Image 1: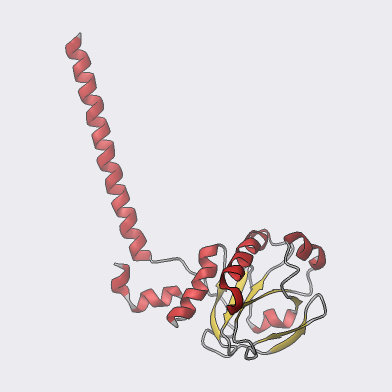
Image 2 (image 1 turned 90 degrees about the vertical axis):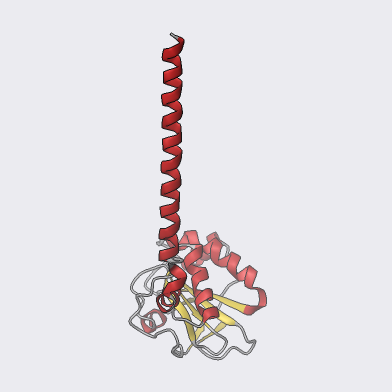
Length: 202
């Protein structure tokens, strides 16, 4: 009887060790795949103004009827992040706390502007519900058309001179932060950086 128990215990340990080795192999492959893929960045889909181009210039009024300058050189030397949202876009709503957090972390180096299409409705209630009354919120169909934005949520990062430094579809904090990383690296996108430096991703 004791011999049978010993065999069972041996088999159990053999299975456990085999599973542990299998998990280590999977973890190694995941790590290799992660390095090859590189960090995920905002997906650029716009056929309009490109990264590196001067942004189209707009002088708009916010929902509070305050002037909002987009694409013009910043008098305060700040970059500008334009977050394109819509009240009926659930993903846009989930990103608003992230936009606010990034604006807070960037401090006096960033202007955060929320933008939407005039065809949408309920903007006043949406702005109040999401607690973004302290940020400019503009309605402009022309602004979205200038960047040829077809899907939301979308974000555009301009430097202090109104030059486009990053843009694309954003679905997570990582996507939004990739715009700032692309600006820091002076690349159109994180993907472009890894295409030019393939050795980093291998």
